[in-house]
Image (cartoon, rainbow, N blue to C red; front, side, top):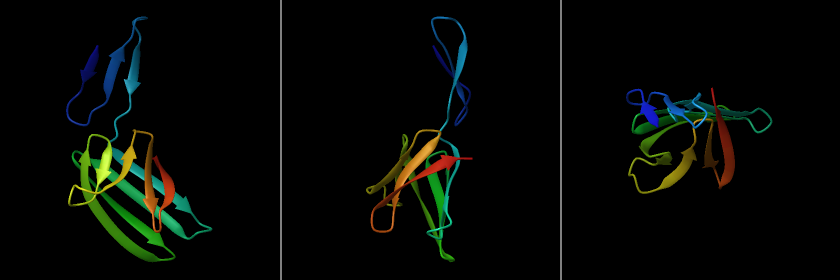
Length: 104
């Protein structure tokens, strides 16, 4: 049995042993930092949209887009740029370098 606590809320599931397990929501803020590469990235997911800020050696870029289930898409909704599972967010940066952001 799955019980949802409103939009974006946590869900609880009761298994056969009758104890509750919390399922993690994908909503929230994810971050990545690599000081050696001068790269910092933060992405926030709320509802059906996401927004992010990336800083590389002090050059800041802002992005936003839409969500479809746990996939991140650009503003057009056609280009898939990543996915989130409630603990981590996987995306690519620059020339295709894969990075993993962790939920705060």
